[in-house]
Length: 117
Image (cartoon, rainbow, N blue to C red; front, side, top):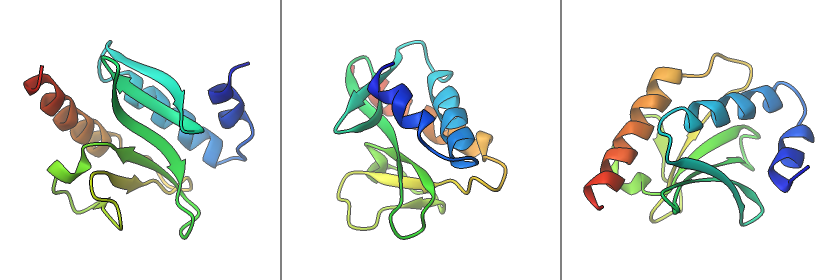
């Protein structure tokens, strides 16, 4: 078992299910997105460039999707907080995951990466 698998398995439900669903949503966006373990957390890279990651918000105690180049996107659900580059999308594990919103944000981020190729 690798570090990422262990991370998901040690989470309690419903957070575990939420994080695993987010993982699948992220990986389904593009064949060039890969799951890696960086900085002690599950990260996702697009063509070996840091793309997004999953973690828990300390204050809200909720899982979130961090978008590395989030500063380029204005969306009411994205939080910048004290980050200069990244923005996060909180996901309440007791509610339905906003799949369309996440897909749209990730596609915008992919478009940004593709423009830079």
